[in-house]
Length: 408
Image (cartoon, rainbow, N blue to C red):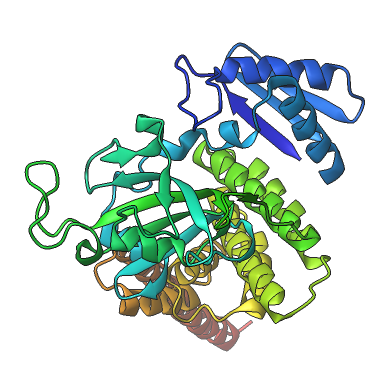
């Protein structure tokens, strides 16, 4: 598995009982580890970034363990360096929740970033300790975060700690060690009036929440046991995150490599029940979808169509704008314009104001019109040539008849 870690000039904020380290320090630690291992290949290393490849999942797990032992800090602190980054700074909350999140109810939407493990947390049984970051529309920095305050949020079974209803409702959907993004309606946060001047009226929030620890009624920390399947899904989530990092750097081939490896692992993972089947299927759908996008980016429409075929074995794309666009784009590159038009128009029925779709359909129609003009011109030339050829033959026939009529 390929990994990339980039150095930063400032320290990261981490939670209680953890130290702050420069990413550069982490790169140095990994460099020391990989130099002494025949199972790890350094792809590139400089003052800013380290790229390395691990042979298999056991190597990766061992490396994480060695680093935790040496630095007394978990790799997740570094993998989650972007905990405070706004998830949709350049887009609207409404668009983000509709396109990227799943509906929990009318007031909460959810996107899982790290699936966690064990059963859904029962806040009536446990004291829940969690990290959080709350975002408002168009503000780059979080309005509030446990990493700013160095103080974790708590939901206590004794009910003696105030927590916003929206946060409580979000946590009742989560597992131990899970990290997720939530869109939360203002109705469950600060209401229609807000808290001026800091929180405007009817302010909907996006919250990033991670469950850190659980305690029972006696104050003892509870640690859930992770199953092999849950461990696989956690590693798949990390691979998915790393693939997205490569995608954002326009390294689409590397992103495809990550997705392909974990598709192969997931497709060969033993699934014990329907719940695991559904979870693995959901992950495969996301990975196949993103592979289609990557292949379109590198203009390999044949591969896009093959990946799309696998995606359609798992789910219908009829209501999926992203999938309809990707298939239409691939067909367009393959010069199957009429078929491509059908998929673009199907997507526009769902999102009639989608500018990217409108522009691509306009481009496609221009190509179709140009081909029709070219075909008309070619037909005209063909008919004209045939007419001229016929006239020429007729003239030649008359000449031949005239010449044959002359006396010897």
